[in-house]
Every structure is written in structure tokens, then in C-alpha cells.
Length: 360
Image (tube, rainbow, N blue to C red; front, side, top):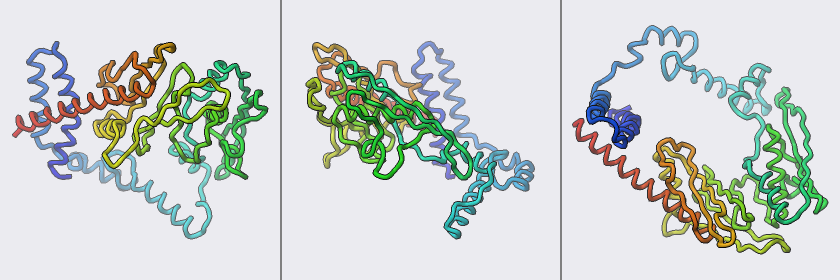
């Protein structure tokens, strides 16, 4: 690791501390000087290599456990070697690698051995709310729980069906939740299986086309009746989590459908794309956008962003209220978030330059 890269890594650790000190007027000036002096010392004083201090311990550890990134750490090289040997075994035999029960149990604690479809946790409540508002009989759920054999070991799995008495049908069904000739998906948790079933039932009631398998973008437009609409920004979404709206079933209450919030064009990234990229780069993560009805009669909406890592984000950042139209509320939230992120990035850059000048 070269000196420049190491310096940047250290700065990324200390800048949040410096940021807090600068924003805390109740700290006396002496505190500011002490913290700055501490950071300067840590950045300019060469440290004794860990491998030299712990050389004897590292050597004895490697004798029994193989190489590790740090002294006393997990021997990752041995784990990688084990995985590569099993992959080579499968390539040679054309069959799954031989594993004993202890190995399977250990691996299952690290990764999911049974693939699960991604599904959000709000579909059951949204389905019940939709049925209440449209005077549709309450959906009924039936549950199946069983052990699924994976590599010869039983793993508890659940499958849930959502029955719509008004339609005399249940979900998931072929074309809506499972492919032709395939079984209905199972889940590790019952609640997740229940939300999966509710999702397909609600999309059927709204006359929405089933999304292609593997698609993570769940439609959420203004047809989500007067209550709250959730817009989930996915980590791997190429457009920063653009939400789409689809038409209602005939006979439903007429509510204008929204057009896409934004679309990627040759003119450059959209506001939400810029928010997603900047949020990830600055360590806040990609936000979700929570939009809910403010005043039904006036069609005004309020909204706010939700970040995974929000420890240093002001409480009211990005909050909007009394905005006419749900789509416009979404846009304003995203614009406010982008404005704050760009300002925060500039502040960090200024602090970085100031710190570099003081240590040169």
C-alpha cells in the first residue's frame, strides 16, 4: 500500500470526527486544537509494522492455521483453498462436492444454501388496506411449513397462499409467482412467504402485469390508494430507484396514474441516480423515499428520505410537506437530498484541503 493511499484511508477515518468537532460550538477552542493535533500526529508519525511487533506470534499462528490478513485473524487463505478444492472436485466429477453434515451446517451459517426471491415487507398491509378501501372481502392466507432436504440435511421452509374470495382464486399461481411447471417458491421465514403471496394478489387486483423473474423494481405509483406509498431504492438499480406506475383494474376508483419520476437519457444521470452515486461514495448508502398523503382533499403529499447510515444526517434533511401531487413530492425530496449531499461533499473537500495544508 503506497503512502498516498494509506493517508487517504486514514483521513477517511478522522474526517467524521473533525466534522463533529467543527459543528459543536459548545466545545472550547482548546478541544479543537487538541483533536487537530492528535489527527496530525497520527497522519505524520510512522507506525511500527504490526507484523514486526507480533512476528513470533504470527509465525506460530501460521504453523497451525495458514496465512491471515492480520495477526490472530481468521485464516482466510485456508477457507479459500477449501472452496477451490470443492469447486475443482465438482468440475471433475460433474456432481455436487462431498460434504459432511458439520461442513454443511457451518456453510449454511455463512451463506443461504437455498436461493430466495427478494420481496419487501409491506405487501400484506397494503393488500389489506386496498381491500378495505375498495370493499373487497378480506383475503385469507394458508400456510405450509416443511423441511426441505439440501445436501442431505433438513432446512425448515415455508410456503404461503393468499386466497381472494371475491375472485375465487389464490396466489402465487402459474404466471404470477411461479413459472410453468415449477413449484411455488419457498422461504425461510413465514412472513416473507406471506408478503410474496400478498404482492401477487395485490398486483392482480390492480391489473398489473407480473414482473419478470429476478426483477427487483416493484411498481409503486399514485394508484396506491390514499394512505402511504413506499418507493424502495434498490442497491443494484441502474436508474437510482425510479418508480413506475401501472393502470388500475376496470371498476376501481379512478386515481390519476403517475408517469416515471425520471428516466435515464443521453443528457446525463437523473437526480435520483446522482443521489444514489453520491450517497454511496460518501458512506451514507442509497436512500429509500417515503412518501405519504398529507391532505386527501387537496391532493397534497409529504415525504422524506431514509438512509441506512444516517448517524450524521440532520433529522429534517430532505423533508417536504404540503406538495401538490405525489410525483412532485418525490422529485422535491430527491432534489433536497442532492443539494445537501453536494454541500456536504464540498465541506469534506475543504476540510481535507485544510488538513493537508496544516500537515505539509
